[in-house]
View 1 (cartoon, helix red, strand yellow):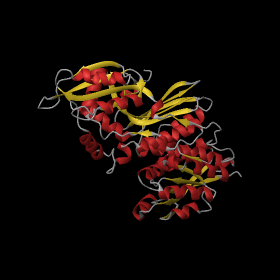
View 2 (cartoon, helix red, strand yellow; view 1 turned 180 degrees about the vertical axis):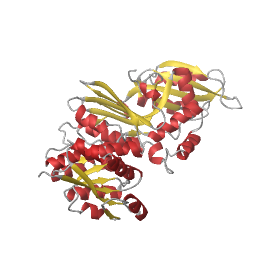
View 3 (cartoon, one colour; view 1 turned 30 degrees about the vertical axis):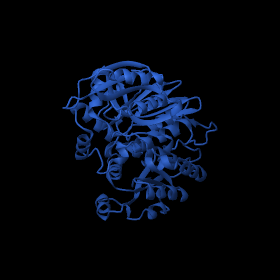
View 4 (cartoon, one colour; view 1 turned 135 degrees about the vertical axis):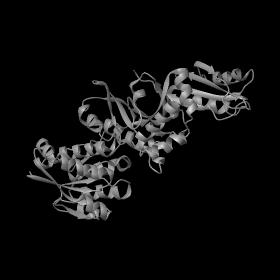
Length: 440
């Protein structure tokens, strides 16, 4: 059924929600002109009475502190969920669909962890869920995968997907400071939460990689299938050595590769060549590299967080969805296909190959390198380059030995390192960082 006006209910008036309201009101005339339909935000909701009062000044809108009133409002066509978290946010999305509403959300965690449930319900109810802001904020990567590259077989996705960790690693690199000091600076600058665990341990990046992979391969890639490692253990000395001795820059990367029907998924600190485009992506910026069999490589870059970029994506979703609601076509064809007939399998550590940076900290005496080399040879580990640096402790009893490997089976390297770390000549746990090889 066609509609002359599309009504929107906005749930959540925090940083992103207030940004959405401001952007919509400032650009309303242009938005409606591009959409070809009248759009009104008719109902707003927030748990804070003060925020509700401030946001509704001068507006003819219903206000409520209860999300149920928005979801059950018969006049609302689209519910915009921006409250964050997982519990209530999921309920808002599910109940909106159950009540015949289309949905716009920026909630990566809810989508990544409940992909099939949400999109199966949307299909059943002939409704749509849009979620551009869930990955990369204002970077239009969801639309790129779902529409622009629809004709392609997507071979791989590589991304710097978290602004907090990229800010921290940028500071550690530029200022040669510890992880703890860089994190403190990020928190003081508003780029890290008071409790930053989801960011620094790679959970946020894994959620985003799950969404992109699920879109690319029309199959729910659950976050728990992603091999995940954070950055809290990173020592600035490795950032320095990797750059000065081997020409690599450290980034937290989300990587998804598909070879036939087998997928390799990881989130972990990785080294990239200093002249690769990703090496210049600093601070809160994100970058995503997509490869389609017909398109080749496509790089998307921009701010990955913040009120403005996220609001840009949310309002864009709102516009495209409102256009379909006005025409009476929303939900007639599912926007997300999660019914792939090709079942995917996931590569285990036994099947993963790559190159690695190694730092062994050992006693400074003759024969040490020979002992280490013999163990590496036992597991068929071939070394491409090795440096023995000056001692890094004041006592000068231990020296760092730096190595770069040729391509190898990761499980063999880990077995070798476990054996090396048991030697009495080794001072501390050996550092391993994967080298992600990408065309410059």
